[in-house]
Length: 80
Image (cartoon, rainbow, N blue to C red; front, side, top):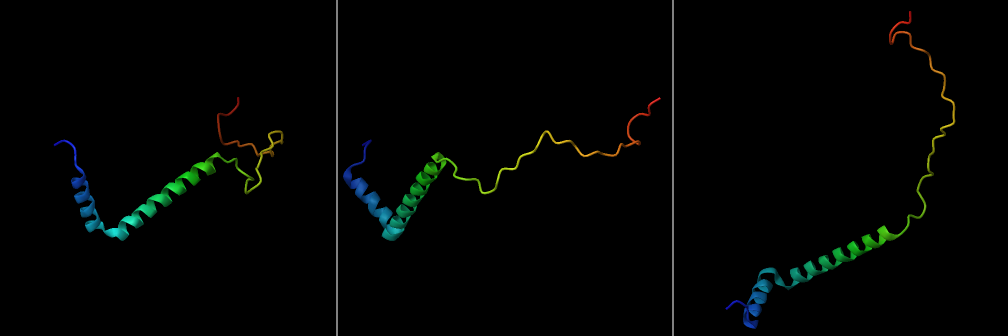
């Protein structure tokens, strides 16, 4: 009584086919297959090394002298 016989599975499959129809099931399986293919392609794209950056890399020169700025006299304590 615990397991289902072949006749139970046939009835279940027949009900599923009647509810969803043959076209909907094949469309659903095609969508699942496309999803799996795109997932695998995405995993392969992650393994590849990046080719060339689209923009040149911008660097900051740390040895450059900063531009002179005007001293503010209104901030801080007054020197005695």
